[in-house]
Figure: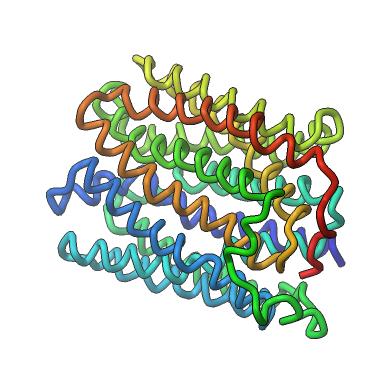
Length: 392
């Protein structure tokens, strides 16, 4: 059953990421129709992520009580609705309203999917399962930007309508074929008096901190790079789509095929350290890029590094938590969302000052995250677990 669930979940997340990454090449152009700048783009992305920050733990905890499948369907349907409204926007306030709604509702999808993986895998296989999720995202990121660039050449609003339609199709797929991974007898066992702050235990607090810092740098990169590509590297929406496609290929190779062997060879903790340092080097290379080839290589290297961090970090949180998997992973996704709140604001604002600063500052953040992990998290992880991981 575990392999079947993971296979179906892979397809679902692949389609979700196509719908999400379709927007990458065209959104900077789209918002400029309303007189927006790179800083506005940062705040727009932050509004989406702020809603995710607030609601991801709530959706995760709710999935511990009522099951994973209905919550995932709410997220997919909500994202479809919000993207339809985004495509019809007529002003910047309309854009912010639609993007915030997208964050509120779509935040039900990813933590629930990660909880399904935790439900369906053994602890020692969890990093591989989380890597499979990342591989689905990476493959979706290969096709999504390419499709977005092509559709954007037809009509600047068409990619957003395409995203809405694809999310509805994915919602129907979940309804028809994805089995529920949390049986009724295991629902609600650990959630009645559970507070989200209980999840910040000594074993996991610094893992959450690393998740935030790694995503902070990723979000700043995603916001600033399209502007760098257009202003300095001579790119078009279609060529930016190709760059993100190469980035997706690199990430999917690492997470889909290499996570298992790498985890067996060096373990999750070393994977996180290597990933953070690779990401820092890639960001520094992005800052000094003067042509699209160098920029593409830098983003591919970044995807490889980030592809080591997320599955290893999420697996460790899942293994060490003493609360329900839905709540624990919802909080993990909330830390991701916090990074996506602050990262785009920092990246978009710094870009207005200097085109290299978003990438250099993000490189420093990754080095700091590696130092925090070595100094604070490793001693905790080396100690015996205070309690067995929660069953939920």
